[in-house]
Amino acid sequence: MRFGKLLETIDPALWKLSKIPEISIGGLTLNSKDVQKNYVFIAIKGTAQNGEDFIPDAVKAGAIAIVCSKEGVAQYTPLYPQVCFLETSNIRRLTSLLAARFYSKHPQVIVGITGTNGKTSTAEFTRQLWEKLGYKSASLGTLGIQSTHFKAPKYLTTPDSIYLHKMLGEMAGHGITHLAMEASSHGLDQHRVDGVPFVAAAFTNLSRDHLEYHHTMENYLKAKAWLFEELLPLSKPAILNADIPEFDYLKKCGRPIITYGKKADDIKLVHLIPKKTGQELHLEIFGTPYKVFLPLLGEFQAYNALCALGLVLATEPSIQEKALSALESLSGVPGRIELAGTLPNGAVAYVDYAHASGGIETLLKSLRPHTKGDIWIVMGGGGGRDPSTRGPMGKAAQDFADHVIITDDNPRFEDPGHIREQIKAECPKAQEIGDRREAISMALHKLHSEDILVITGKGPEDGQIIQGITYPFLDKQVIQSLIEEMTK
Image 1 (cartoon, rainbow, N blue to C red):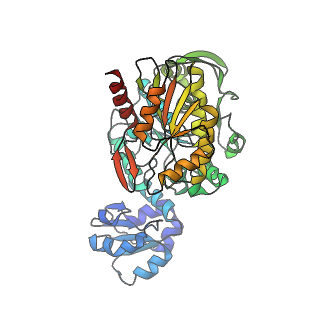
Image 2 (image 1 turned 30 degrees about the horizontal axis):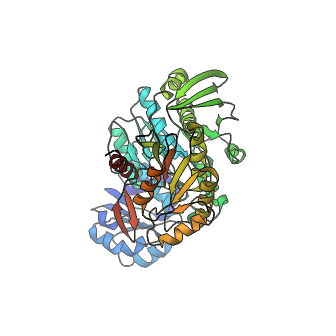
Image 3 (image 1 turned 120 degrees about the horizontal axis):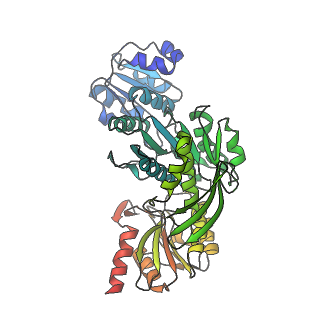
């Protein structure tokens, strides 16, 4: 593919201004170590490293073109006159658009999901619904790429744009026609999903999180709103939770709106009846009443399932009856109210990824209707993250759990005792046990027959990060081994 032609399709003015020659390129990369002959090296200035420092390495490896800042062009053009340099003021967005054009193949139907909690479950539920309706589908996000038709290494929630568009092409090559993907606030703010041809997008909810990056809740919301205000085409629908405070702001995005929730006009949750193995949902779908059994615990899982239903119906309204029937066979996502074990006395233990106050509150409130006994929670806070979230996490546990044990959860390079103190400051009833296995063991031994225990923070994560070292630790596996010891 010719670089000039590629650039012309994105920004004709920039192409004319840059006077890019018609050179053939073999690939795009952000990593100088991956440069091959005739590659374009995109030198991004990150928080940890400046990609422009690696321009000499990229040229030596065979880069035929470099995309960088105005300063980078000025510094390196005289040193490498044989290389084509392109300057840009928004290198992350240009990277995404270049990748979208270079790897032009993609699944025919791509939907995006953003919000603080529920993105992973909603994406996976959307994939499952499509599969049950006969479409070759995939989901992409925190769990990597989930599909029965395609396997790929696990990556970040929203991977870098070059990897993302390359994977879209590979999925299409494997016959995948439908993709549900998470869009994190970091990924949206850094333009990593620019260029993805979304046909629908959904918003789950918003609670305090990632303020170490966004600094304010206003910035956090604006980052997520980018999906609707800029990336989603004007004619394509936004599926919005009608029950959240941000609904009034989001509905002004200028796109067609499909609502879900108790206050919704389109996918209305009329009544929910908790059952031992799930919940009975009384719904009104575009005015027609339905009753379905959802085999998942927690009201928030009902919201995630209805959000997924909205995405599916937005892409093909004619399959409403079949889609509703498919809700009754959904499977939970690993680490989201995932049953980890049942004790000999009948008490149950779950693991869940909740790691912010909103998620913990929602989780505990959702579990309450499913038990006649007490709710126990084992929780912690990650090191190297916004410390202002720790007190509110503790308060959520104080207010909505009967018993709380505060433990360590990836302290990284922070003092784990200090993290626990910050959580306990607003959870005075909590017991503090630093060793995570010991904390889980203590809770299991305290459970009565009707009690529920939930271990939060890690979900499907299989390691505990302490002082830069990752020690093997999977909550579900630890619970099962401890229960096995208790039965001997």
